[in-house]
Amino acid sequence: MNRELYEILMREILINIDEGIHFIDKNGNTIIYNNSMEKVEKMNKAYVMSKSFIDIVDEMNIKSSTLLEVLNKKKIIENNTQRYVDKNGKEIITLNTTIPIMDNHDFIGALEISKDVTTIETLSEKVMNIKKSSQNKENKLKPMYKFEDIIGNSKLMRASIKKSEKASKSDASIFIYGETGTGKELISQSIHYASHRKENPFIAQNCAALPESLFEGILFGTIKGGFTGAVDRPGLFEQANKGTLLLDEINSMPMMLQAKLLRVLQEGYVRRVGGTKDIPVDVRVIATTNESPTKILNENKIRRDLYYRLNVINIEIPPLRERREDITLLCDKFIKKYNAKLNKSVNGISCESINYLKKHSWQGNVRELENVIYSTMSMMDNEKNIVPEMILLNDYYTLKEKKINEGYNLEDLENKTLDHIIGNLEEKYIIDSLENTGYNVSKAAAILGINRQSLQYKMKKYNIKNFNK
Image (cartoon, rainbow, N blue to C red; front, side, top):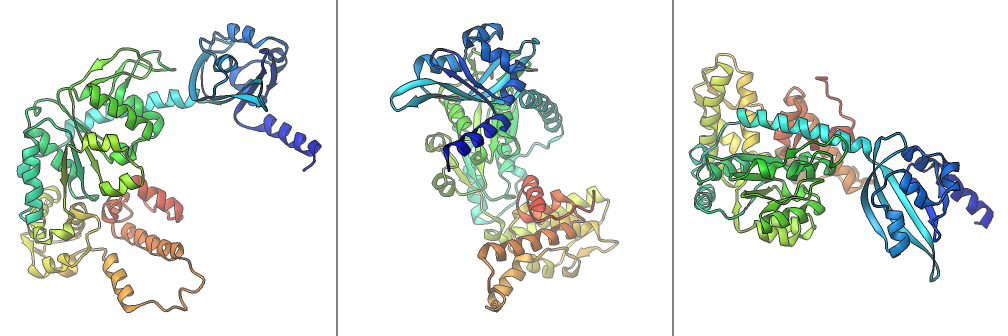
């Protein structure tokens, strides 16, 4: 590429890029100030270019300019949030990366790349307030589970319950591993309500349900004026003080926040976003994951120092396929529950039905079994017992195993990648699950053994329409 064409391309990129670009030379004079930066700061480009950057900083009431800092220290500053007031008196929040520019060993100036996040931060605060209000309502409506609510006489399940009961007698952090639908929150609540903290709050937060931009404020709280629209609001640690905080799917927490969580666990205090005051907290943390500890450690989904800090007591909940002898007890419990909810009078479930259910793979575990009983009873009329032909069971995994045992025709697989084959199977199973639940996304997700957000993502991926909308 010749120099002239290169310069034309670079000029067009600088003019049209969404990020703001501001370059000052070593004497503090603005050399580049693109359209996006002009839009963010509401400053006229010609005016900025005609003045010293130090004068511009004074005019805009910028307390700590990263451009000037890099100009003086000649060190890169990455992902720095900066707040200042534009010429109209409106506060602006930008996310900046500022780097020193060198020509061989000669320093020639400082370059700042800015992203306007004012709207995002304001929206984040609104969402956090909605989340807090919603959580308060949920906490009032949520049942309080205790050990006597846990169903299971299998050897593996009894061992997990016994370990959990012992864990309730201490204040040590707990790390619970169990597949989706095995009852991690039920175990967590049981531990809390059997402990000396039972009169204080139990607060649960799914770490996979929040975007990274909201997480820190929800976890640690915010200070009024910390950013646009921010109010004094306690985070989950303060709300759970003297009680228990359940962090579900801890492996989905951003690494930056994992480091801050580790500090809170080690030092026993939190600092709200935008604040300078350290607030002491006394919270027992229970962390859960639906992936094995080995897997999340090997894939760097959790910091090793945080994992070892949380894993003082380790509890593993067995999947339903490893405790099939508990299926009869679980079915009896769910039949009683949905008789009351659906105003039915189902007496029980036949032995043939239990044997049929025991052959299923139960990828969604106990939650999937409950939904199967719920959907089956919803479609029953005046029958007194559940028989196999009534059971609305999506036996996809059994069908898949059958196909594998029967073998594939190699000609059918020609020119098809493994991803393509797996994708077709996944799409079919999602469609079957949605059809069997009347396109109820929550129920289908439970059967699939994934969360609602993951199912919605996959529906979008495969262009599967929700006919309930």
